[in-house]
Length: 336
Ligand code: NAI
Ligand code: MG
Image 1 (cartoon, rainbow, N blue to C red):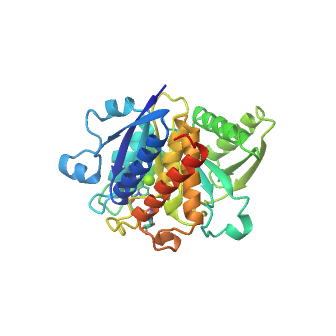
Image 2 (cartoon, rainbow, N blue to C red; image 1 turned 60 degrees about the vertical axis):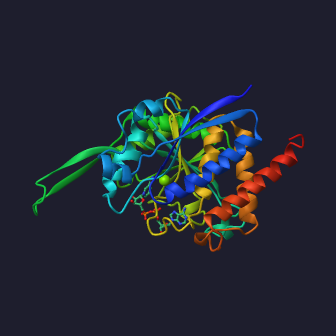
Image 3 (cartoon, protein in one colour; image 1 turned 180 degrees about the vertical axis):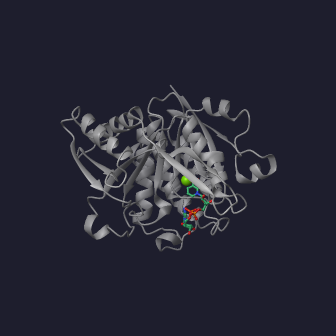
C-alpha cells in the first residue's frame, strides 16, 4: 500500500529558497526509490518579498492549508528590507506557536570528514539531542513598551514558565534519552541567576526524573553552546507537536544569510538533515537512514561547501547526495 505524506514547503527568504529547492530534488529522488510512499509537496510562497507586496506573511487561508498537511519543511525567513522582529514574528514564530510546536529538537553530531572545535576531544562521543522548550521562557512573546520614542522608553520582556509547559517538555526529553544508547539526560539551566522560572524548571526536572529510574541525569549551568558541529550550515532542527494534532516543522537552524544569498554556495546539509528528521517523524525511518547515510558518505569523501573549507557548490553537493542515494539504495535493494 502506498501512503501519501502531504508536505507544506515554505522556502521563505535568501538561501532558504536555494536550500529548499535542492532538498526537494533530494526528496523526489527518495520518493522515486521507495515505492511504499509518495510525497505531495505543496510549495507556499510565504516570504518577505510577499510581505512587502501584500502586508502579510501568512495569507488568510494559510492556516487551513497547514492544518491539512502532515509536516512543514521550512527554509529561513529574514530580509534586509524588513526588520528582523517583524519577519520572525510574522512567519516562523506564529507557526511554532499556533501549531503547538512546544518542542525544539536539535540533533548534534560531527559528520564524517568535517572538522569541528570539539572533534579531537569528542569525535566518538559527540552525539547529542538538544531538547529546547519552544513556547515559553524567552519565546513567550509577553511584554511591551511605554514612553516610546523618548529618552525614557521602557521595555519589558517577560519570561513565562508554567508547570504544564515544563512538565511536557521534561517528559519528551526523558523519552528521547530513554530511547538512546547512553540513556542520559543533562538539564542545562541558568537557575543560579533566574531564580523563579528556572528554579521551577529544576524542580519539575527532578520530579519527572522519578518516573524514569533507568535514565541517568545530571545538571549543568551554561550560557549556551551549539556551533560545535563545524558550521551553522550543517545543523538541523525540528519544532514538534508531540500530540501530533498539528503538523510539525523541520528547518535548518541557520537564517536567510543575505551575505551569500543567490550565489549558489549555501551549505544544504542542515536542510537535508532536517528533511531526514521529517521523514523519520512521518514514519519513514528507512528513507531517513538512507538520506543520512548518503550525506555522511558525501562529507566523508571531502565534498564540501565553502563554509566547511571546501570549494563545492550547493548544486554539486546535492548532485553527489542524489547519486549516492541511488547507489546505496540499489545495494540494499538489488531488485530495483
Ligand atoms: P544566518 O544564519 O543567516 O547567517 C550567519 C552566517 O552564517 C552568515 O555569514 C552566513 O553566510 C553563514 N551561513 C548561514 N547558513 C549558511 C549555510 N547554509 N551555508 C553557508 N553559510 C551559511 O544568521 P544572521 O546573519 O544572523 O541572520 C540573517 C537573517 O536570517 C536575519 O534576517 C535573521 O533574522 C534571519 N534568521 C532566521 C532564522 C529562521 O528563519 N529560523 C534563524 C536565524 C536567523
Ligand atoms: Mg531556519
